[in-house]
Amino acid sequence: MRKTSYPEQVMLDTIRRAGSDEGLIVEEGHRLGLFEFDAFLPDYNIAIEYDAKYSHDNSISEIRDNEKNQAAALNGIRVIRVRSLACPVLDPFDGVEVIDMGTEGYWEWNKVFPKLLNKLRDMGVPVKDVKVDSRGDELRIRAGYMKPVKNNIAITHPSVAAEWDRVKNFGLSPQCVSRGSHLRAWWKCSYCGKSWHAMVTDRCGQRHSGCPHCNNSSIIRSMKKKAVMQAKAASVSC
Ligand SMILES: [Zn+2]
Image (tube, rainbow, N blue to C red; front, side, top):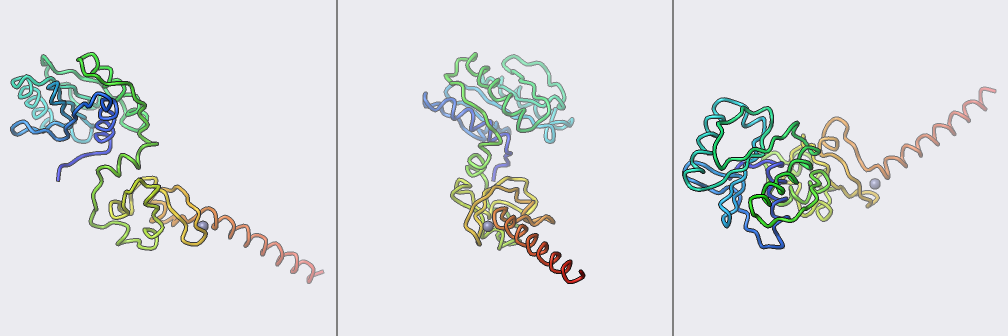
């Protein structure tokens, strides 16, 4: 199975939506000999790479990235690298463009991928502007690529997984997430039937958060009960 990441998938989703009116073909994981490109536009011979800090900030990846740029150039492929500022600066190469990315995160992705669309337009690719909302669209995007994992919450936390709202989660299954996930998903209360939004780790971790609708009302109920008991106790002691 090809290794991918959430920001890489946000990038692919952005290019696909931006090129959908023109039927732009966007290939994922296009192979060129020993190398593989995150995104590839076959009709324009353009490859796009997402260079995250954690996987590209060492000397081995620096050599590999330079070799990949060279292989692309030899094959007439232009390359755009959306690259973290924490990564080493690569050798300058004709046909390789770099879009600098600062701190990686939702806000940065929302800013940097529209810049990528501008660059593609400059290179003659018919893409329209699209809004990038990497947080708001997270469930939809993740549902498109996430696969079942070994220790998923359906195994480790079956009662929590039973409240997973598959419809609101864009068809994503609880088998695809593990207990420590920071994904904000929708849940449907098995007691009151109302839905709410919460992080997987908050539901499965020490906080064991539950439905805010009936939890809240049970807190209010217990507070009222306590107040009545205190009033009774006060009247007895008088
Ligand atoms: Zn409830």
